[in-house]
Amino acid sequence: MPGTTIINSQSSHSYSPAASRRVKKIYRLNLDEDTALKGLQRPPKPVTRSATRRGEGLTKESPTAQALPPQAGTIKNIKPPVVKNVQSDYFLREPARLPTRGKVHKVLRFISRVNREQEFAVFYNIGQAEYNLLLRNIEELPQKPRLAYYANQRKLVIEMPGDIHETIVNIIRSGIEDVATAFQRLIPRWLILCHSHPNVNIITQNLTFIPDFVHAINSCTDPPHKTHPVFCEVGSSQSETDLLQRMRDVVSAYPDAVLIIMGLIKETPPYGSPAIQSQAWQTLGQESSVRSQVDFLSMRTGARSLDRPTKVVVGGHCWCEVSAVSFQVWIRGNAAIDIDTQDPQLTARGTLFPHETMDNVTTMIERGLSLMRDRYVDISLIADPHANLDALRAAQVTLPFDWNTITYTFTYSTQDMAYGRYVAWYRDTVKGANQQVLVNDGPAMYTRSRTSGRPSRGRGGGLPRRGRKK
Image (cartoon, one colour):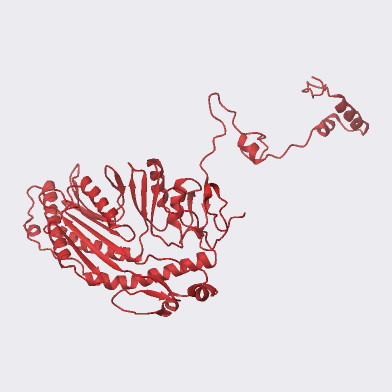
């Protein structure tokens, strides 16, 4: 073809007219034929990113791997999921690998946010596959959330447990474990195994969730028989209506439960970061470094107490105020637990704070633990029908923890929570170490940066993320 270079054949070569003139000129310089041929070759073009993605320009000499020829019937240019290393400023302690787009990314960004004003969020249109992916990614996060997934509604509810929540749950769980240990000592040999699980994924017909803890009993048989006699769930940001519905789902999936404990922590008014130009902003926000916890709490104003939680006010701003802590308990009668029952023999309500009225709740928990003892007997007899369990049957059960201990302990948990919120606010809002983002652009909750007053330019009218170049 005219104007093209012909592939060489042994010792002779043919060129275009322009190439022939260049060869004659090179020969006049007394260069050999191989050198002349090299002078005709154009320098190779650099391999661009777009060419690499298309599989173009890749040779054995290229720094990237040799591209495979496309096979018949295959789809080309399939991009793998984008995953990036997220720096530690997104997290409290360590980096993790997270999806960088999609609904799961939005959920994880909410979970990993440092300066948190809301401990509770609802996300919609979350499919089962996305929920499973979320469970795998959560294992890499330093702070584990409490999840409730409603598959039929494609709804995901997230609650981030705080210091007060963890204080109450840890004391109750430790008490249940002490009772379980005492029961096992009354069993002649290893007939059962019992565990109090803080991170068990409970699956019901319409709900998948992780309660604060579940007490489970296994018989040492093949196959083992398992029962879940005790459930405990403490909500710190959710409504009582949501918690009650969750307990109904638990009973429908685990009708063998004999004791359910539900706690509710209320913080009124809900926590909010200091506003711009507020007293806290003009004092704490102008300091060059974060105060230590002792220095921060030494600035408290208002009432203080060593044995009861009080409002934590520093710099004219309320960093934490617990208004009420209440409990409701259910036990099993002749049938499965009825969450809607008003029978005083099967349920009891009480307030721990600000005024303690927990006598009925204490009595109901002791009756529920007696029923748990009977379950220990039943499961042990499955393993050995002839076991001597008279000592276990006669064991008396009392409340394994003190309500005053819980109140005394979360007195200091409120101060820890207040200081943690101050540190997160200072590092995130004042110094800009992290970025606030939209939590969800659907019908769920959304937040925005308190320091950004620029108009919306994002897609769909979303608010601009602070730090993004315009």
